[in-house]
Image (cartoon, rainbow, N blue to C red; front, side):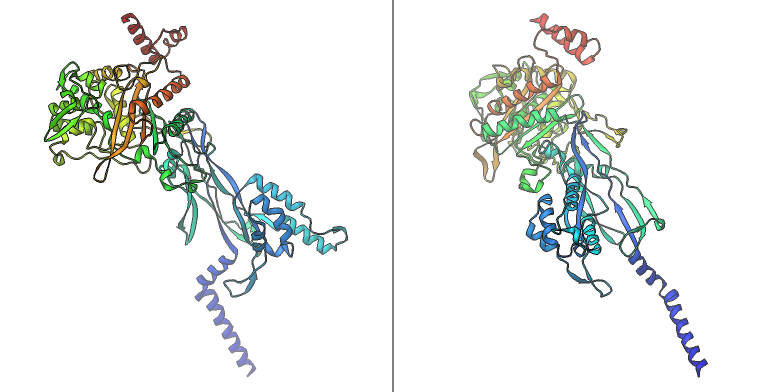
Amino acid sequence: MLVLLLGLAFTGLGYRLVDLQVLRHAELKAKAQQNTQREFRFEPRRGDILDVKGNLLATSVFVKTVCADPVLLGNHQVEVARAVAPLLQVNEAELCQRLLPRLRRNERGETVTNRYVVLKHKVPVETWQKLQQAMAQLPLAADEKNLSKLERASHRALRQQGVFADPIDDQLRVYPNQGLAAHLLGYVGVEARDGSGSPLLETAGREGIEFTLNTKLSGARGWRVTETDQRRRELVALREQDVEPHDGLNVVLTIDSVMQHIVEGALAEAMEKHAPVSASCVVVRPRTGEILAMATLPDFDPNQPGAVPADARRNRVICDVAEPGSTFKVVVVAGALNEQSVRLTDAFDCERGHFVYAGKVLRDHESYGVLTVENIITKSSNIGAAKIGIKMGAASVCQYVRDFGFGTRTGIPLLGEVGGIVHPLKDWNKLSISRIPMGHEVAVTPIQMVMAVAAIANHGSLMRPMLVARLEDRQGNVVAKYAPQRVRQVITEATAKQMVQALKIVVSAEGTAPKAALEHYTVAGKTGTAQKAGLGGYLPGKYFSSFVGFFPADAPELCIYVALDEPKQGYYGGQTAAPIFKQIAERAANYLNVYPDNGPVSPEAVVAEKTDPAMKTAVALQNERTRHD
């Protein structure tokens, strides 16, 4: 009987061993690893965003997640909350409640006390260091010398380990210039993604460059697979995998932060003076398409994007469309000159400001008689532009509108760009050929308008807007460099010169924008004043005013577009937008040391022209102008 009982016992034990080590091997191994094996994920440092001169526009700083162990705190929650709350900037009473021990059941059904309470995320390292000092000096007893050895050890553990930081550092995205270039930079948020069966929280771009270049900025995540003891301390000898994170790349933009500050300052003054719904501006180099500044107001602080309505975070330069008004006349006149349908000296009867076409009356803002093509641009005659379009033909007008880039996205690397509205030729009505040349029946974005005029400044060559100059690693080594991209030759160089000649007079006393004229530079530009369209037709008293110009006119360095949506105290583009252009242009020319083409040649310029091809061209043009004068 004894042998039989022992045999049965060993048989049962053998079966149990087979069940545990063979039949349930995979299940129990996973449970064992759950108890002892830990996987830590390390988020890489997000790359910086810099301006063209290396000034910091966005960066990431490592921060702490501050936690507490309620078990170690004992009955000292009030003292700890009093010391910690001011540094963490949280409510003391609420913090005290969170520090109280609480019982819960774990996965095995056992009753345990919570030993890990998150007090605050994203705590700067400097604040964490002050918090450590405050905890080290925490008063826990009136006379600790008379305490027992066990009580002193308990107080020491409380001060050193009662409040602690998570071993895995977090990072905080910081925009040191607050709202500067906010729409262009965008902002970041935290999003959850599935990974290895558990959700991953990672920083990701939401708008602007942060979004479009998120994969370049993010880098590659690192991880560590290791064993821990029952107190969750790592057993380094049993570490299985240890892969370091790969930091994200730095993005160097074509934006110049000083230029951006100049533009935003001028727009802020315009907002105060004219109280428009919004004000926008783009500054671009015509030769390369590089964007030196892009701004729209109202704006926001990307450090706190949720503090403003969603409407304030919209980049109106690429997202909003409006009828351009008279600035669009340069498109049709340039096309007509290029097709040799007209010459600058050709004359058109502007009907004393009252022209009937297809049963509808088209009016000018003044009663003009016979005007040359050049004067049609100078005086901004709607009737003259319409007659040029009619002579040119609908198919040709439509083609040049498309060739100048309207109706399609420019390709700027920003989220949310729209292509505007350009109806196909088959959808044009009888009035379209007379309305489109004056900037009606089409809707464009500010970025489209500035790039089209920049094409005229660039000898007729349309460029793609360039916003990113290069990518660099943390050591400053160039990983990728981007070159200017030419889209197409829209008009010939000879036609472009004729357009420049006509656009110069717009800024004279004879034209619509004398307030855009610069003292030391020749400006070529065009005003625009368009009544806003709405349900049921055009809205009375609501206008979209703009001015676009470039200088020095014969060797352009900058092309600047300014737009005001529903300005008050004047609404003509020459009254509202042109002075803003002048303010920005003067400051930009001084900052960028643009060589003046409307004054005597300085001795410094004579030296500079020997080494700088652009300066040599400017000096030659100025000498020729001086001889002519």
